[in-house]
Amino acid sequence: MAGAAAVGGAAALGALPAGAAQAAPPRAGAGQSVAVLGGGVAGLTAAHELAERGFQVTVYERRALGGKARSMDVPGSAKGNRRPLPGEHGFRFIPGIYHNLPDTMRRIPFPGNANGVWDNLIAPPEMMFARSGGREEMRMPIPWPGHRPPVLDLDDIRRMLTGLLDTAFHLPLHEVAYFVNRALVFLTSCDERRDSTWERTPWWEFVRAARMSKDYQRILAIGVTRNIVATKAEEASTRTVGTLGEAFVFNALGQGADGPPDRILNAPTNEAWIDPWEAHLRALGVDFKMGWTVREMKTAGGRISATVVEDPAGARQSVVADHYVSALPVEHARRTWNAEMRSLDPQLGRADKLETDWMTGIQFYLTERPRMVEGHVNLIDSPWSLTGIAQAGHWKGRDFAAVYGDGTAVECLSVDISEWDKPGILYGKTAKQCTREEVAREVWAQLKASLNDTGRTVLKDGTLHSWFLDPGVDGLGTPHPTNEDELLVHPCGTLHNRPSAATAVPNFYLAGDYVAVDIDLATMEGANASARAAVNALLDRAGSDAPRCTVKGLHKVPAIETLKRHDRTRWRLGLRNALDVG
Image 1 (cartoon, helix red, strand yellow):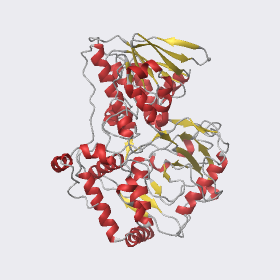
Image 2: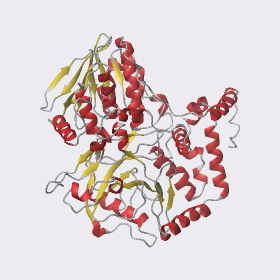
Image 3: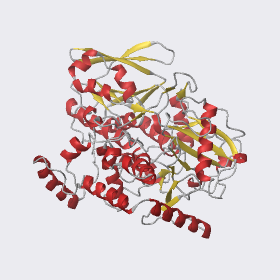
């Protein structure tokens, strides 16, 4: 019933014009059945590609389509004829370095959009590093052709210049020069050096953060990793941080980009993307089993013989299909792999070494729109490593108060909490040790500590209407807190534990942001690319003559590739990178 309700909502939005989707014509290998286990971005992508190629696809999802990417209703928040306030696991961020996900979005019809839901992407014109302790914020425009510049008054300009100069004077010149050198070392490092030496080296160590100033650590070591790769500088491999940092630099320079470095959706995620996607897949013939939980895989003769699922009533039953695509998050997927599967394919066992951590969102609904940066803000001095964005101002043409809630909230300030194991400033407790209410108060206090500390009151207590913390977090304030939606993290060595989309089990495939693809990060792009790789492997084994999915890697600059070839020779000789001064 949940799936039917979602389709009804999508139709009400006009997400699917009549006749917009048609079943694919018969092809060699088509008509075979595929069970897609999990309805997040990976699962929906796999279902999309397979349905277009004539396969019979059923998606099994225990909670809601979209996974961590979805938006959700805040229970009991709607009044009158308005919709509930929109909540989410965390704010969406779809940078121009993504190519596979945008291609999928262009193929999802949306009324009035020539390029489907891709046309619902908009680009914030600026971003900000917010400081605490009375230091002015670093507010920076994001240059891109066609960008509308943010509206600034004289005080805004004064604050912007003060923040930039303050940081410039606090960062010693020799530290800036050293960081630039490290960036160039990585940029010119061959893939072999990246996959071995830099994969084993934490970013914190690579940039020598422990020896540097506080500002160097907060901005160049920690700030970069939190903003770009949502991971911890002290643990993340240099290969992961450097590869994505490199991609963002190329993106900002307009090299091989799908669009601007920062893009968000122009409405809550389900309205702008997930609900139209579900409606389109249903029109293609995809069947959705909502509220069904995958429990285990059964094997016989070296193949998957069935998957055991639990239906919404709690009854267990076996589902038999020709092929099985596991699109569950890694921490859930590996619980379903039995000993025979692991013996057939050792990479499944290595996936047990992959690690997850907490990164969870909270939304604050405000009765007055705060005067904030028109884009993302990184509170780099906050103990809980907060990042956020005031969303409603970006949803142009939409009267937030008229559409959502009780008519008094005009803004949704969406904040991601990246650090759950360090004490806060209000209670002196970690986020996991706090109750849900204490988490909300602590995050609000940390937001004010960074945004209200230079003479301008950005956030006012009297304007706080309500808040919503991701319901996937449970047991906060108890000895055993849990999180249904942990995030894959990237400590050193992670790369070599990532499995491929094609497994040694001939009718079993993996899709998810933990699967080995070109973008080594827990991202929607990685989920999408891995699903495409899984579908290609399935097509090969099914004997299908359907076109293979395109899987586009990160952009490579020819001039840089030449320098990397030179470094490959040095690496083979056991020499350092030519620019590496140690």
